[in-house]
Amino acid sequence: METRYLQRTSGGSYLVSLPKEWVLKNGLEKGSTVGIVSPDMGILIVDPNPLGTREPRSIELELTQDVGRALMASYLSGYERIMIRGKKVITSSQKDKIKSSASRLAGLEIINETSDTVLLANLSVPVDLSAGDVMRRMHQIGDSMLLDAVESLVGGNEGLARNVIERDDALDRLYFLLIRLLKMAVGDQRSADKMGVLPTQCLDLRFAASMMEKIGDKSVEMCSLLLDRGVRIPRETSSLSLELSKIYGEATRALLEGDFGLSGKVIRNRSDITAAISSLAAESRSPSEDALGILDELADHIFDIADVVTEG
Image (cartoon, rainbow, N blue to C red; front, side, top):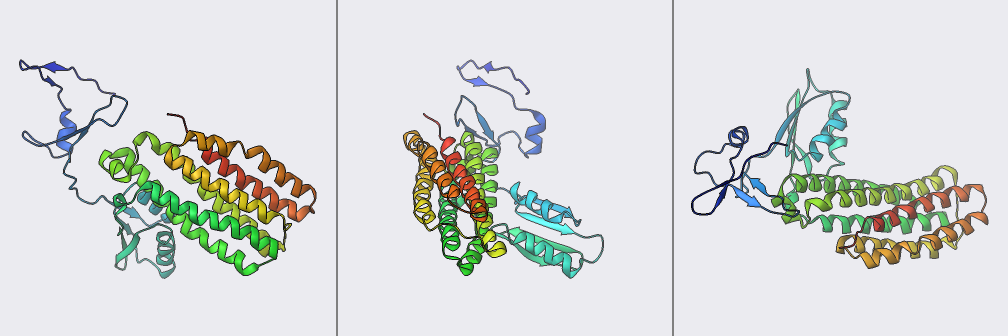
């Protein structure tokens, strides 16, 4: 960390000089206006662009075998325009891979192509979205996946199981969008204000979002057991899934409202849910035990969401 001496003027105001490199990098000069924000913990943030006008961030990527990972990393880092350039003509299969990777990322679309380049742009306006709204939508999708995954295994409904698996793509898109939003909030106080979060909340929200994404993954795992191995589970699991759904909703509400009391109520259900799943597993045959084991892991992820809610 670089330190600066505080100076006092004859009028009683205090001055601190800004690093020359930072001033030049941000295109500032004598008379430029900067913004000053004090979010919390006594920290001051100097904003070189308080009016919010800025050029879209762009990056150029080389076409490699890992282009999908590079594309996702650039998206999550907040780049609005991503140029992928090949050393020679980009083949149809390579373009299909790029399109497939982009389809997992909300708002990212191909806007131009040449023989050796693909230009993608983020066409959504992420700072107009609330992080809480995205997480509520993630909860809605994940909750429906949980309930329908259990129903598909109870009734042997393969069509419903396939539908649950298809919904996982929508959940993943929201998850990656939220990670992008939270990264923007950490680095830009204006973005954080528009999203309704404090930078200090971003780590907890990111962890909770990863639990929501895993709840979807566990629902998919259960459905795959039905489709691949014909696994079924006891009918009594339906009532247990309704209880889990209720707890999942309360955990999400506790997180987004900062309700420490409600999170404690959620966590106190943990032993009862674990015991109920264990009881069903003890009465079931081996394939059903596998599915109930996955349901137990899913329940742990719900309780992990409540665990990150802190008091005060």
